[in-house]
Length: 132
Image (cartoon, rainbow, N blue to C red; front, side, top):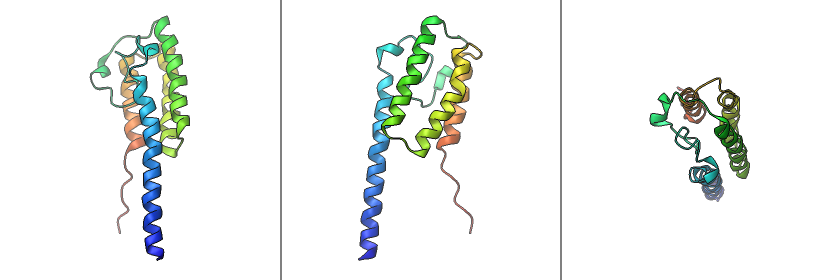
């Protein structure tokens, strides 16, 4: 009986966690089509995933793009707050640690994308299994 309850609990926990992750993921995905970010959409992967060909972008944000970056920071925060968990919080803190350099023009979009891609990989990698 205990094993059956444990299995049910694990299933429910995983299902709930997946549902929580979906809220944040869906919200972040929605940023890609948000018109407030049209000026930066071709420079940044707005949902926070891989930046692909944007890694070589040598442009720096202009005043209009800086406003969009400010709104993007707020929108990402709202997405993370939908279902905060250690992974999404760590990712957001990593994002916040580098986005000010982009806003202040200290890095190009490409340099930001490279830093973000590295931090994203670092914070989402699966921990190695201990050797026994």
